[in-house]
Image (tube, rainbow, N blue to C red; front, side, top):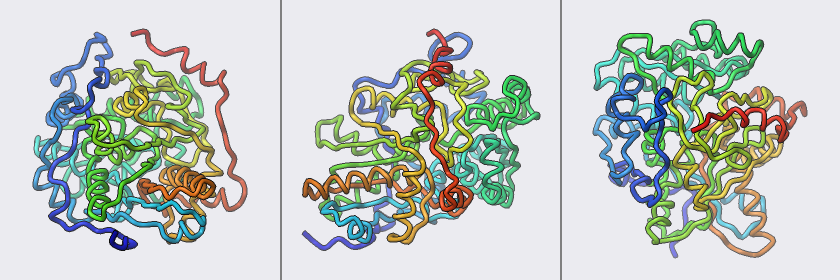
Length: 454
């Protein structure tokens, strides 16, 4: 076998020209999205007042395996794609493991994360439809940053509702959005009806993605020429993010490497779904087998401790219902949770794959996540985002298992972005003031007991 370089780069002509829709290969599809008023499966006509028409079609398409990436989007991708697949030689040496560790680095763009892959696609379809602008929510700020950059590129107005605790903890991420022309509002705010309602019901709340989604949807539907866009959870987003997995799969194949374990952090499911989609596709078609691990924070454990049920996608209960692993739409993670993985539910695609046993899930506490992040930064030279560091933690755990057993497994994980705007969290870890919070069964039951009856 030829020597594996530190970084495996693909040529421009090896970049995907089509997104891969894993739903097409799923014999048991994710359950349909339901209209919040009728509880009937939504149609494209139901979604178009909220989403761009083409994105609504992509959201409901579970039969087309490959969807062409428009040339304008591919031209934008060329600014930072294909992204490198890196062999973590220094981390392997540090751990003294026989495992081979690879990470797909998605932080090599101005927005600092994988989120740009879908942001530019959604902005493109909004521009093509002739819209004035878009509204959205953001948790840690990576999605808001990516969307503000994409909207600036296409000349669209961008309104971002940022989870309040992140708005306060990450002022520099906020300022990058404003530099690209976005209007950034801490959520829940007093600017929307649903924001005022949430503030009245939960005085002093630090917010959640569910809150911010409700506000962004209301803002989109009450302004002419605007639509709502979302950076995770939705099937259309996982579709766009499949470029991550397709490039990873191509790079491994180029050097004759067969992945044994594929690991991704999991909040709403966008990067995880994008990374694993071609590998899961092979499993669904009976062509290969992989161990796939979704890693979520112990403070927001939708897969490992949630229920697989229909739930509202937002706290204000104005969005459609999705069948997913959920903690309840009113669940609000602890404010000391430093990562962006704070959504109450999980992508319907990821949820169904997990329910079928095709992927595994683990939850990890944040002090151990930052310990892994620090180890990685010191030997690999990249300061990872807190979200990415959940995957790093489990990749290290798996590599140490190989040290015990002597197995030389190929471990692949997604490094979704950089952590240079997350220094408040790193400071808390370095100062020893960071703590772990794990909700009790009683706390979770309080939220899960109010799931809608469907």
